[in-house]
Image (cartoon, helix red, strand yellow):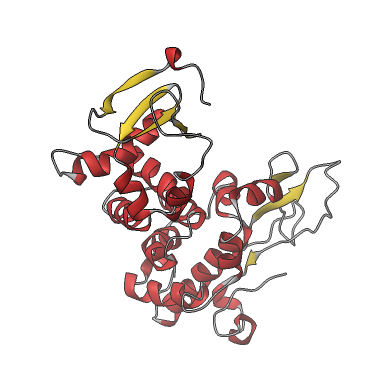
Length: 294
């Protein structure tokens, strides 16, 4: 049986008198129509057959989600104005999370479509889309924006993007600079390339046409990902250059990478990624413009 019904309140918007199933979310009762849940979700087709609850106000089905998020989710079915464009980003993020969790594929596609219409920071978008295993090709504009940025991702941004993405971005930037130099630019930067040229480079570097290590990583559960990359065990550190009294290399830039904190029990592997001066580096060293790891 659910909690004492006397402490439950009816949700002001989604307690429908003609509803035929009741859910309990954060001590609020949502009485809605079972049809939508059974029509679109295998999860709910199974969940609503559990004998432990009967789906009435006295014995509702409990859901371990936030009340506001569930209300946003239900809005898709019960909106009386039919105006998706007026919904804020936070609503679509909540909808995306719940649809992915419960297997509402059509509603998930709607959420992705609406998120594509909104402005979003490229690092936030890449992190979000990877978490929910959304079509990677939708991230190409975000990668283009990061490639054109005058600076590499900050330590905090690199933490969110994860190492493989950061290294691929650095490789794409390096190849873009080389291409700009080949076009006769005396001070080549990745921002000088047209977007279409950058998209071609990103397609190649990120191997958009086939599965990559990123795809395998994205398929892991959020719990496993958090455990493997827990901030309690890892920290970002600056890796010095390779020459000079202060450890810097003239004309080069070195990345900031993850390193284990003391006592974490993880093996320490120091990786230094250096972008060497393009105009003085033999072409063969770049392997046709690919990144160079030291």
